[in-house]
Structures are given as structure tokens and as C-alpha cells.
Image (cartoon, rainbow, N blue to C red; front, side):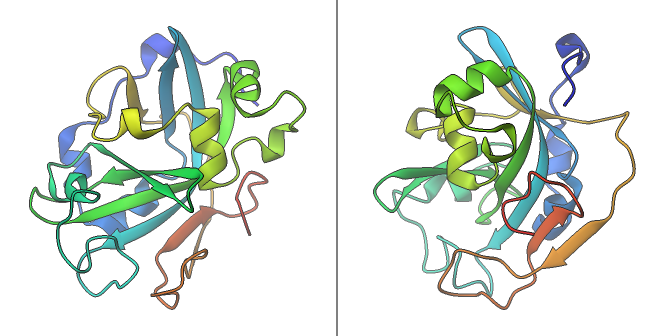
Amino acid sequence: MTNDLNINSLTPLSLSFYKKPTLKIAELLLGKYFVRYYKNKPLISRIVETEAYHETGDPACHAHNGKTKRNEVMFGPPAHLYVYFTYGMHYCLNVVTEKEGTAAAVLIRAIEPLQGVEVMRKLRGEKIILKNLANGPAKLCQAMDINKKTNGVSLLEKEIFIADNKSRKKFDIVKTTRIGISKGQSLPWRFYIKGNEFVSKP
């Protein structure tokens, strides 16, 4: 765990990053920092697992059957958060990708907590061990205070953003099928850092 990150050195990724093909972004997000200011305190984590979703050829995508009130953020400009409520109890965090009008996004499935860990523990539960703090889409939303209020938030501002990790060590990426869905399971659109203990399900 790294506690000496200089928050002032972290800046939001540019809009052009989010305009790339969704599958490419799902891989490129691995290792990058996810930053969230909570009550003026920075919560910083490293993205270790992602899944791609696209309106074309993907029955698991929320936009597969067209635009609705729930999924309209996916059709909007890239570099925004698409946060949805599922199973009547959990939130899931997605990053909107590609050009405006195309419904595509990357689900952040797991993060490695780096800074602001004690705050994350209070948001999740004091006794939760570090490895289980944010190793799943619902867990990380709780740990980073992501909910319906953050749906549609721009990632180009300083409240919530993703920053490059210029000092990151090299790692191998595992590409596999998605999990936790009933349709489109065969698509190999899930990516995670090989050997990372914070991945939801290696």
C-alpha cells in the first residue's frame, strides 16, 4: 500500500483518452489512479479490474435495446460517470467512452486502496480487511462514496477523476469472460492485473 502519493501531481486524464475504443480503454485503465474527494479528503486507489460494455453486439449492455431514462448517460459525451443501482441495494461505477451518441462504457470492477484507507473503512465498515475493502463493483462504490448523486459527473474535473500512473511497474493483463451477468457471458471483455490480490475473482 502506498500512502505517500502527492495529490497535487495527479491530474485528470484528457478527453481524448475516453474517445478511444471501449475495449482498449478497459485495458488502459488498469494501473491508473481513481481519485475521489470526500469531505475535502482525497481517496486514492489503483484500478485493477475492468469490464467493457457496448451497445453493439452485447446483450448485457444496458443500452442494447435503446435509450432509456436509466441509461441516457451512456449515450452522452465520454469522460463521465455512469452510475446505476442494481439488485435493489448496490451501485456500480462505469466510465462512459467513445463518441457522444454511442452507448459504451467500462465498468470498474475492483480497485486497490492506496490513500484515505481509514475513511474508506468507515464508509464500508471498520473491521473489513484491506484486501476485501474494494474488491468488487458494489464494494468500491461504498468505499469511494459513489452513488446516484455522482451519476453523470464529469471525470475532467477535480471532484472525481482518473489520473495516469507515471511510475507504475510493468504488469501482465489477464483477458477473460465477464462475470456476474446472465447474458453475453462468452464475450472476453473482462480485464485484470495478473496476480493482484485486490481483483474480485481471479
